[in-house]
Amino acid sequence: IDLVLAGTVPGSVASGKIAQATITAASTTQNLTDTPTVTNNDRVQVAGGVIVGLSKQAINTTPKSGDEVPFNFTLSNSGTANAAAVPIQVNGVTTPLIIVRDSIPVNTSFSAFGTLNSAQGLYHKLGDTRDSYATIAPADLSQVDAVAFGLVALPAGAVINFTFNVKVNSNATGDIFNTAVVNYNDGIHPQASSIDSNQVRMVVPFIAPTIRYYTSPPFSTPTTVSTIRQPL
Image (cartoon, rainbow, N blue to C red; front, side, top):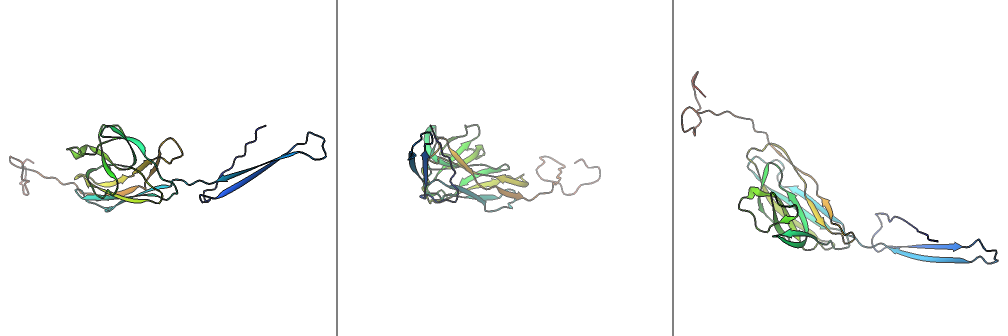
């Protein structure tokens, strides 16, 4: 006879706490004065875990077209176990890293990395596979469609900050949204885990359209005064 006892550990239980389960089985199939019994005691200890968090902030949430905006990231592990790396490609070589990835928002372009701390700044180019990065920026920064911060490890209790800058396109208006993600291994499951950051919203002021016209070659200086029936 197999007996399976299943239970759920509440999320409020701290690591290191111990629960004890006692099971006693008695036989009723035998006509005996003393009923035979069997007792089994099991102890379950709550193991420590990885609790990764990622927050993101735009320093300027109302930039104008052409402005440069820094993005700040805070990566933390408030658990009691270390977060482990996942395999990615760096310069064509498989490399285990914890990755904080951020796609360059629509209507902006990558400008430069800022604070890296212990991380490696990584560039992802248009057309490359998702987990393929380079440590050297391409000559044309408009080819950078995502960047990442690579960490060898994220110990329990660690809090790390990173920054990079984007430039708002000259023709951008309206809302710009963006969310980053961290990929890591929790040490329990074989597959990678991922956590999204909060969503960042920037609002670029609307610029009213204008009409300029020219009356003579080389059409480089707008005409400010014209006459009736003058071609535009």
